[in-house]
Every structure is written in C-alpha cells, then in structure tokens.
Image 1 (tube, rainbow, N blue to C red):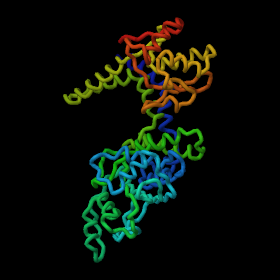
Image 2 (image 1 turned 60 degrees about the horizontal axis):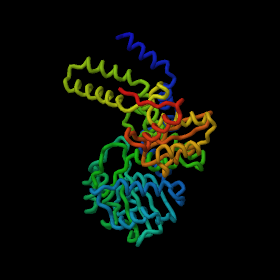
Image 3 (image 1 turned 30 degrees about the horizontal axis):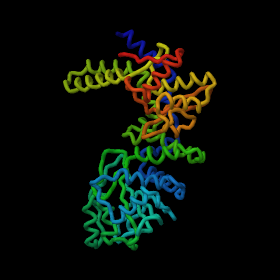
Image 4 (image 1 turned 90 degrees about the horizontal axis):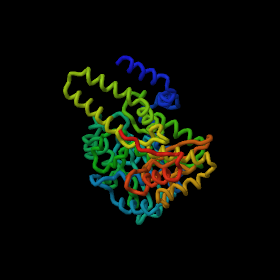
Length: 425
C-alpha cells in the first residue's frame, strides 16, 4: 500500500501540469501587493469603475448590469413604481443612457433629510431615454464582502426627529430603503420621473433584510458582466489588464476567506487538476474514512467516494484503441487529424455539420464566441501553434444518427485510421 501511495505522490510532484493551478493562485497581482483583496471599499470602487466604462456602447457593463438585475429579481422582491416600464425597455433594448454618474461611499445626509452620515456603498444616477414615462434612473447598491448586514444604530443625534428615531431601529438595508426611497418623502430632491432600484451585492448566501433589495452575487458579475467584456476583441489592453488582475483575486484560496467568484479559466484548471489526480484524492478520502470513528463522517466519506465512482463511470471514448477522451476531446482530436490532411477549419466544420445533421450551429471554429451556446463553455485546443475552439455541447445516444452519435458512426465508416470506440467501465 505504501508503494502505491508513494507512486501517486511522486507522480503528483513531477507532473508539470499540476503546477499550473498553483501558479494561477500564487502569481502576484496589484490587489495582493496593496493587501486589499478583501477590502470592501476597494471592491466597491472597482465595481463603480466597471459600471461606468463605455456607458453609451451597446452591451456596456451598465446595460448588462440592468439585464442581470432583471434576471436575478425574484417574486419575493417588492419593486418600486416604474420597474415594469424599465424591464420592458431593457428586454426590448430601447433604453439609452444620456449620462451616468457613479459615486462610491455616498453620504446619505447629502441626499436626504436624515442627518446621519452613513455611506451608500455605490450610488448611481442616470439620465435615460427610451423608457416610457421616465427620464432618470437611480440605483443604490449595498456591497458586502465578509461582513454581515448591520443591525440597529447605537449612536444617537441631538434632538432627533421622529424619522431619525425610526432610522436607528432598522437594519442596514432597511435604513437605506427608508432614507432613499421616494415613497417616504425624505429625499432632498424631487424624484417624480425617476425609477429606483435597490441592489444587494454579495459573494455569500446572505439575503438582504429589506424586501426591496435585489440580491446579486459576485459570480453573477463575473459571468454576465466581466467575462463578456473580456471576450471582446477590441477591448483596450489597460482595461483587459485591470479586469484580469481583479478576477485573479476573487477565488484565490490564499485569501483565507470565502470564495467570492470563480472564473472559467480557474474552473478548467481545477477540473483538469482533479482529473489528473483523481486516484490520489480517492486514497486521501479512504484514509480519512478509515481514521474516523464518527458514523456520520463515515457516511459522508462513503458518499463522496461513491460520487467519484459514479463520475468515473460516465462515458469515455478511445481513439485507435488508445487513451480516454470526452466527446468534445474526440472532436478536437478529429479536427487535428483533418488539419494534418490540410483541411481548413471551414471544411472541417462543414463535414461535422453533415455528420451530426446539425446545420444551424457551430461545432469547431477559430472564433471562440461562435461555439459558446446556452451557458456551455468551449474547449480550447491548438494545432501548429494556432488556437481553435470546440463546443462542449455534446450528447451521445447510440441509437441516434445526430449530434455525437452521428459523428461517431460517420467517422468510423469513412475514416478507418481514426477509429472511435466507447470505453466500457
């Protein structure tokens, strides 16, 4: 047994691919240098900067943020007057931003009759068009990183008003809605033509105590705002650098706190790391199971070990009786096989369309955005130092003649020197 474990550990240590995930987390960046990885004010300032970039452009961060708000709003949230008009304009794409003013750490006494100097994490004030009956949009964001929502206020003002006394008895989000919402008539300015949105941004499971706040997670921001921005070919180098520096700090385990969000690059590295070292993980779980005397812990370890077994039994394929490949990896290898025969990517894609009987979608391309569909991420590969991308949206039904089954049957029929076989577990 010791020899088996020694073999697994030495294999782990000498595998250069295992270093990739460590390098990903250990690489220095500006956030770590300044020791602000978990600083709430710094994250608020970054989100304020992000939402203020390219506001007049189609699919700008602020517009994607509004789409995200609509997506995340559930039936338990009570929205303010004008929300349905705004939602219609967002979904139809008629909303336009004439101006966008974003402030981090906005003092509530500057915009309300309440004299407390509490600070709104992010305050957004927009002049808009294309929304029926409204010309202004106000968004108030409460941002939480490691801390929970604050409770009652302990300090008191001299000669407080009735409203100020009420204010101190509320939780944080309740206070901010109370003081900022136009319905309570505590604002210094008139808001008759303004739509208001209240957002609770957090990496955690915590939900806001006030029913008017729409919860959005940092993972949502990464998936629906930052990643689409990075996928643009015309993004300037400075913005690209800033965004990648930020992403690198969100899921880093060396911050010793909860994970804020995980990038697709990080997910792929972790999945590859697990696949390469699955036997080592299994031996570690078996050792932990053997070492515990708690019956509940034993059941938990049994459940994890069973899950690993079930996962391993999922379909895999060999090529010419060698290797173990997932469906999209088979397609990538077949693409490289055809490239060796001087086939262009366009010719390869046409062939795959015919084999799969899927003529309205893209399976292989030099453009990664073309193979990204319905939340399924692409597989990146190279041939002669040239990148190409394969969709991960594959399924296999051996009695079908479409999708991967169609590819499987046609390749085996027409290319005898590229034989695909299903591996039986």
